Image 1 (cartoon, rainbow, N blue to C red):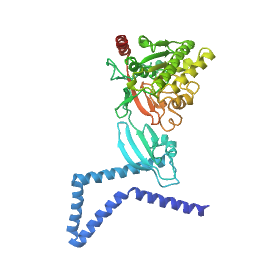
Image 2 (tube, protein in one colour):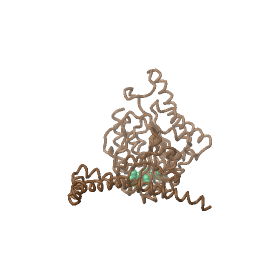
Image 3 (cartoon, protein in one colour):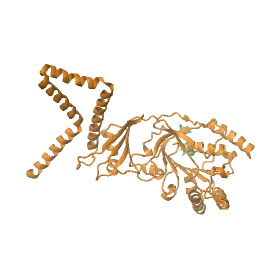
Image 4 (cartoon, protein in one colour):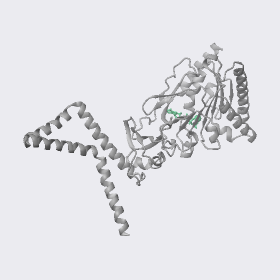
Length: 437
Ligand SMILES: Nc1ncnc2c1ncn2[C@@H]1O[C@H](COP(=O)(O)OP(=O)(O)OP(=O)(O)O)[C@@H](O)[C@H]1O
Ligand SMILES: [Mg+2]
């Protein structure tokens, strides 16, 4: 036993020393250069003068801002790389290899650090994802998220979250709250991301799915999108309100509304489906494949607040027809100018099956109670990569992850419209529609 143990222990020791020396290569090279300079100076000019010249050259390097910054930046980088390597090992990153992901770039953000890493050959991003929670512990951070680069599997982006600039109870005002008129062809500001940048979404050819536990801020998030549709006098609005009161302010702008009854909702969706069929015939006549701003064809915006209500109550036949009509509108409506905005309190697979979820271009997960619920909205695998809406504090309403198809979830705080602002916007929208129709 001891015979096989010793060489292994020796290898581990040699490996550890080699790793330690390699991690301090910059400091070692700098030390050797300085001592060598002093030694050759002493040799040529005598020991006193040699020492002086050696020290003077070190002083020059440190006094000239350009070289001082370079030296300090390299020292900082070297120290960070060592701390990162130590954290990875403490987090249980595969120890069979001495090659660790290399830091290509490190940015200080409002929230903590963002690193771009280069993975060594033979290891994929799943190893980092697997130990992301333990990495957060090793780095004494709140959370660590890992996102793969779709263009280069060897590069991953890691966010170390130390502060949350988006947390807190107060709402951030919607920048369009005082607008007189809006267009659905223009991007809609919906919130602020962790860098403080405004997050915008373009609804043309997109559907939006919002999920989150009761009180997470779904209806408030929907209200910015509904307000934009209402203030676009060309857009036609179809409202399905499982709670009756959430969309009530917009009913004066709507072409059709349904309340809690599932059969009413089915009738309304049939009308929209007929509009969609008529639109495709119209496009065929115009030799167009999809609506465009020049056509002047109005968007049909279907808003469904509380999807779970329509899919879980009423007659079974109505529920099935509702699900089928909604799926049809979401899957075929894009090119015809039909936009579906749906919110659900219960992000579970019976309400939002994967096949339906994947048809939504924008998926917005507000606070959820389980990682499965968060993944039901965003897509499977995001929660384990650190993008889980369960990590959101219940006091921070409107905080969540917005995923635009193909990208990575963007942690953001939704803007907020209070009841008075919604009322004022709805009044303006009604007046605008009366004038323009
Ligand atoms: N972006 C926000 N910023 C600040 N506060 C917010 C925000 N969104 C919502 N809130 C607060 O949270 C409360 C609940 O929001 P909202 O009604 O939108 O939640 P919900 O997810 O629709 O809830 P439910 O599932 O019960 O319908 C609001 O009355 C408001 O006080
Ligand atoms: Mg609601």
